[in-house]
Length: 518
Image 1 (cartoon, rainbow, N blue to C red):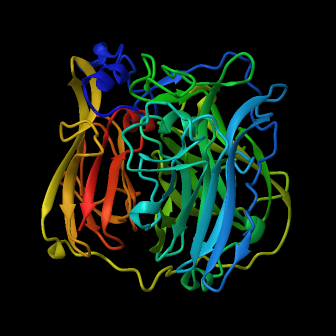
Image 2 (cartoon, rainbow, N blue to C red):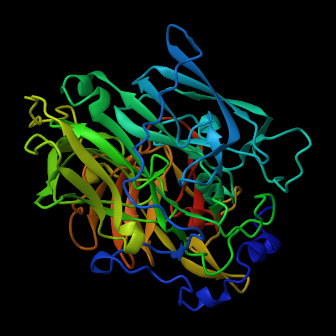
């Protein structure tokens, strides 16, 4: 990986000149009320399986390799596995710990999780705990790499800190109970690495959440939504310029605006079903797709729809529950919701449909009610009595960040404030402990993610927050030609961090920037 000079830019943007005129050769896909996803659908070359033909897989919980008085220690091997995703075919998946998604790590607030990653893949990796309030040296900065061996020669010269084969990440977790996730974050190659399987849940608990008597055990279900495409042999299809993910980076046209698959995987299974009893269930929804957005409804076959009660967002519990007819998730967003199956009879089926999809992507999974039980649990009226509302009056300054397409050296690119990403360029220097207002504007769909610092949404356009903006967030879903204002407090640690679009093709094509906490 070279630096951000003209050579690298030209290679990344090769073949994308048609986009520079504002005509996305990858048009915004059609969807519910015209609000879908920026990207183009990559079609599978095999016969797709019928929906609801395989059971949902729940990622295994990773047990610590050792425990001390204040920390849990884990070891995660990164290595390829061949597995059956589409029935009758085998797919090579790049895995954390041999599963897709990777194993779930469960932690407690304020108790360190120390995770040693061992890279047995053919390319460098960098692990980011998405949503983690983490020291910079452990945040998975895009050029802090784990090389596959000491002889690696893959043009990754522009790095800050490199280890060979092994790297240990320390997560202090001084944060509220929340649904976090970890994924690869290597500069220029995040999108294809995540597409090949490098993602998993990291769940944090605390006493405030424990006191609510929320559904637990088999009724606390993490659901990672990923769209993918397959070739005729069952391998993942992805339009990488270099399929070895060595050099050069980028995707072939017309996929520069985002890669959308035609198969919806939930926890690595295509359109699965899951058996539930007549009880209240907690669903931890994660959009782990590269570019696809979802609008999820719970449709009772032959009947009405089930309402959705949101209890948490990216960074934990809301102050109070919020009811929705459906929930919209942009890439990287998480929603903790309660779904009530108690009024349904056994034998009832509930389809999870996607209003932002069509054809094969208009359905996600199905819940089958198979057992009658008594469940007297109530949805709490108050979720977080200690929830803190930030005040705009405490902001020491306002910054403007623009996310848009732009010509770079005669080619199309994705940039922040007119600048392509460089590890050496800084868009903002902020004081530790300070609060700022960031005004974000977009040309197309851009789910904007800040590392280190969770934030609260002040408003969109000239109005207030949207229906899915409540709580502490780390990713905000900007729609085409939309502006949003967020209130950010930079607690945690000093050092260099990034913020970027979490459409992963946009991120790889330089829609990322640095901020320094001093």
